[in-house]
Image (cartoon, rainbow, N blue to C red; front, top):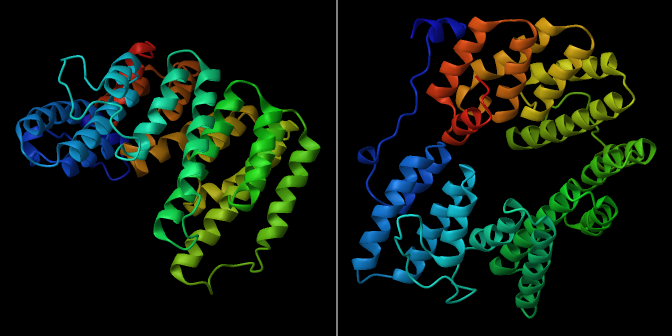
Length: 364
């Protein structure tokens, strides 16, 4: 399509990732690759085929059955099909009544960790956020109890610590969604020793509480803790440089948020600008930069920054937040032609979940 080609700087549009089941051997690894590419519909079809084969096979039905069920639930989650996800997670079957093997609650230990996480998250997506928080507390208690007696240096212990960290992050995020900010702050503070970004997590919660002064103090504590002794990261090894730059980027993003909380959009725009150019900016930072540009009467810069994000990587850049912001800016400036091109880009490159959400919200 000529319009899509012209959108990209060199006039050459990258080919779309159009996957069909026939492009992959039917395997769990192929399902993972399809999910990573955002091709959930094709992944669902392959999961159903694998379920049928698994039910007929004489192999390890329990392990493969749980894995397929986990992937199938992920696909429905990403597509916003929560009732279907519930059927898969709770009852072990999808809308086509394809039963996975084994029964859903055969053994806690035999089920993948992310399946337990999805079971907890289901309550939130079905309208009961408090129940989701309770479920995560119960999951944390169960995993903590199982951890007792294991060596702290063993690989299983390290995996458990990682799982507990994920659960704590989920609890904090759902408490924030439920406006239980003080409890979220308490849990985030208790997890400070284990979480590298604890100070920034606490700062974000304090900012949501409207306590800008304490949030700023937490941010500066984080900066002091990391120390950032170098004015340039040129003498660092490649892997150290990446981590160093990532941490500095997160610190800059948080400082920009503090400035916007004080309505200092011009100052926030100035400190975000070099971060955007560095290549270490997150999608949230790019969105915040666009918002700051809008509040400082730089609408063209706001549009350009979001479009550039899409040009650099249309597969990752066309997430829901960026698409919605671009649609709003195009509508504000009456740029109907560019909005039409954006729709084509979404259809061509965005994940199935983004494309379906756009249709549900009637963005076009």
